[in-house]
Image (cartoon, rainbow, N blue to C red; front, side):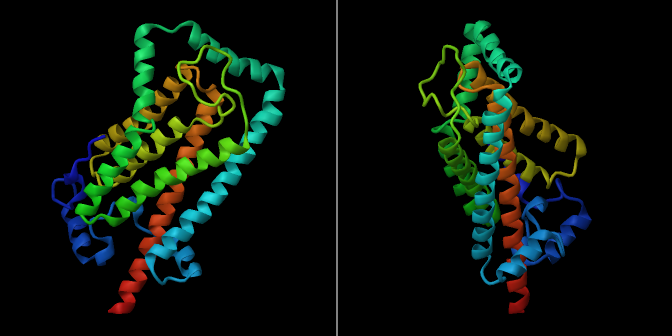
Length: 279
């Protein structure tokens, strides 16, 4: 995914004059940061930073990220047990979920298989690390520290949440011919779907908060939502996940985004307080 660095600058092409003046008068830590990563005065992130003890913004960020990760694993585990121990015990529900996977496998074509490979690859264990590394370098060169932190931690929280959850909750993959060889009992949740939403969708949502045009913003949002849908379908097409696993992946990716945005906002509140104290 390419990133247009022009969107990271508060130039007149993307911001109106009032917002540009606002950037000039904003605290140093907040200049040029996407509005979605900025804390609201008196909001939860600011209260969290105060409760932790403003101190250093990195400490506040890590406290929010680690605390959110623990809650995320607990939530996804509980959701997994609800799925495997309750819902799937209902014969009709389990049959419906399995039927979707079998229908997709029965209607495979060479073109669909190739497309599913693309969807799996762009959210896989090679492309994602390379992309994260490139974006980190880009954001650090432009001194966009919270964007860099968001990029790194959103995928770390998602990946860590997936690993922990899949180790605790065991679910067999669909009973169809699978096009990849991965552990059979690690179907829940779909890590590829979660990763695509967390990284691609998360960055698009964050960066779009600087876009003034509503039409362009909606277009970016549509792209952000289309990516996990495409990846989720790809994983199902390849026989690696059920529909409910892909839905769980969407939930996991969404939670990873929300946790990382909250951590970035809390760090911003801590930075603002420290900058104010230094004046």
